[in-house]
Image 1: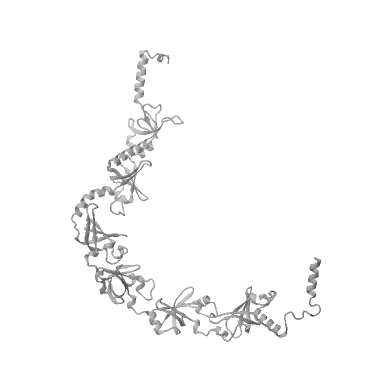
Image 2: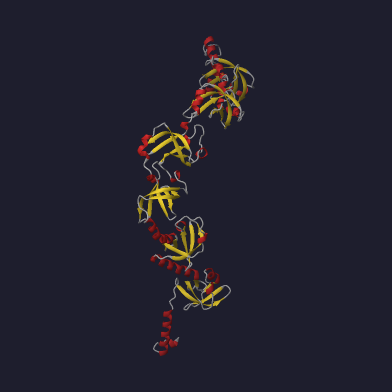
Length: 575
């Protein structure tokens, strides 16, 4: 180092000049993309020479192959890499070829986005919501939303996979490094000029013949005209009658004539109308009368009803509830077909709301009214069990198209109604009494037990507080089950009503089969309710005895009558 101490020495000055010129050429910084020259290749690694670095950076051969750089794995080839660290903890240089490629690719995407230029790419795979597109030039991956694949819905995109094609960059997120592209914009830009030429042919008032129903939306219906243009018929332009959705009137693939009502060259849109092809039928709605029968034509079938035409352009809904008197939740598709002509009664005309309501069942005889005329309330008729559920039977009387409802509580006076219900099955003949008919609500209620004598009538000549004799049928913790002599019904005497003295109010005192007397505590013939009580009978007999033989305190003046009370008083004084 001594020879360089004297910088006046010509040799030292020349060395200093050469050293400075060499260092000025080498500008190495971490985070920069640099180029390295391959000077050694092994089975797994590639060694690069980068001027200015004290050691050779190493690249994994598999990394280069995955990037599609297999052809560049040759001695002397130059490869761009990202310098991540000049020296790590092991003293080695860290570089990445894939990161360098991504950064270079991102710069090219930013440049294309700013210049609004298309880029070349290919769809490599599908993902949630769309596809992944690879930038052919740099290998960068971009997202293609499903809505941006084409200007028409595509069920199959296999013919687009791995095919080089143009894409428009529609969104770049520089912070996250995400790119979003569109194939639809490229297609639409080519079609825009052609579409303008097609729309120029149309004028307001033109009639389009045989346009095909292509699709629906909640605001209108789309028609295809001659396979070259899609036009919209707004919901309000479909019919003079109220329409909630286009599928109420149109079917996909049907052909209809349209009238052009608007042409927008800026938006390249043509608006059409179906209803304006005919005069407004509501202008002469006064020609129709309420509650009068008219022939209507079925034009559309839905799950909830059928759309029918009173005349061309005047469509109304025949709701499924107005098809039949007896069939509930009937499907219009099973009863009617498009093109049928049926009789209907107009039940409502609302000119302001432009609505007409019709009914088919009103043209038919109401079977509930027929039933009422033939079998008024109180009639006893024979019927057949046609259906049953967990709490009732349905009975068909004669050939009338109605089912009468028989609740299990109306099967028997004596037993449990649900248990009695298990004894019946479909096809059983049963004699019933008509209890109630509601024609408007379409309900008929019948009973079986009402055809028999009511065992509760045994109490008709009985009164509250009257003593009766009963037989004990069984006992339990709640009390006694008893049956009055001469009656077929069983009743309960509650535990609290067995005796005045609570110590004697034990159901276990009885074994069953005994005959005892009790009193009627409560009686309601209308509600068929009765309460029995042994305790009440004891109270009545005690009261009668006191009234006959003296007061309750009689005998207190006898000798020793107060002895027990005196002894208790003495014991308290001692304490």
